Image 1: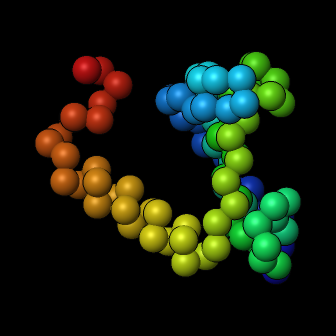
Image 2 (image 1 turned 90 degrees about the vertical axis):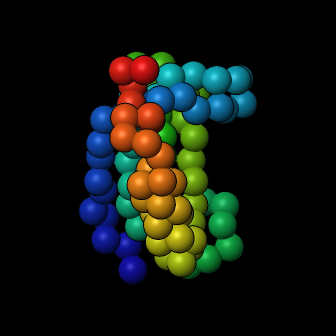
Length: 90
């Protein structure tokens, strides 16, 4: 079921699109009908650079199981790194 609830966060990172690498400034996370994945609903993540316009976007459509596994993997990778290793202040 579509919730139309979108979580928006500011981020600092990079993404690679059709025209190469670009900076990322935000992410939107929501459950909705996918555009490409062959499922009724997916967890969708749009990584964007709002200032650069619609072409600066990386889209991801994941099943619930894949999204939960990704979240766990991200948490595990960060937990296993020395404190501050993934910090922007390096």
